[in-house]
Image 1: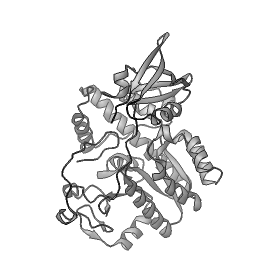
Image 2: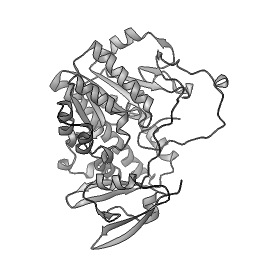
Image 3: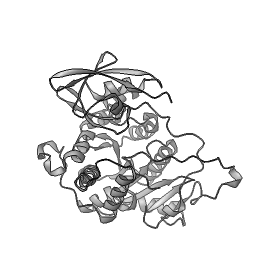
Image 4: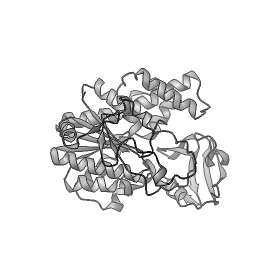
Length: 379
């Protein structure tokens, strides 16, 4: 199954295999391989990689082992080429000051997580990423926020890039047209999830949104390279980098070719995905001994900060929010009686909800207010 950062993976259940019955991994644990599965010697590979201007370390966001691999690979590259910068998909450009203060040693973990609005703008377990952030701070490596606000990407998906005034594009330029294979992959992803907005014009906006997202990160990587002279090691979802679509394609258009794509390779990942094009190299991981990040309560909305509070930018189909009657455009006023002034306020309340609980929410809709109750499933 192809991985993609915007969409949930389909989970298949099966009887567990005994270790002795399991098929051998495509890539031996602890070994590097090329994109066909042929084993590579690590020292020459890492030396070649360290000489390149950009290295993209892909991940599936909820897998702790992927982040451990990223840290170890970053450390090896740093030993070969200390003049590095680290790029993070996880934070938007406006939060760069929090990263600068972190690297300078001015913030504790708790203060950094608060100032970076981590739990609302990214949400995945910060403990996956803190070791990488500590490594960067220890070595005083610049850490660069690569992303833009999720509200901008949602808006592109709703309205199209051309409809967004230049002053509201967060400095993002015109993306290079996506490659045909990338368009096909995005359309397959849209169709596989039975999105109700899969009409041709909506599908085009979906592709534009992904392309703008890729372009935004590529621009920050290219700007960092040009202004600092440092090689940039970017931590990002693998769907933005594999097959040299996404960010690598936009970097090529920006005049920064030669980026290297490295991916972790799970023991149970299908060998057929080693198609000769997926990455420059992959690293074999052993069978997982721990679950992915525990499922967190989810309301199922995209939140957008505004001058007068928090706006609901989108509502996922069949979500808790949809069942509660929340609508796009609603301004969230309170949740459980607590005022909501920024997305992090609502995110924190939702993540404290136990299975089976009900959460009262007040929203401003049009000229009036409405009370809704979000009912979280028991399991």
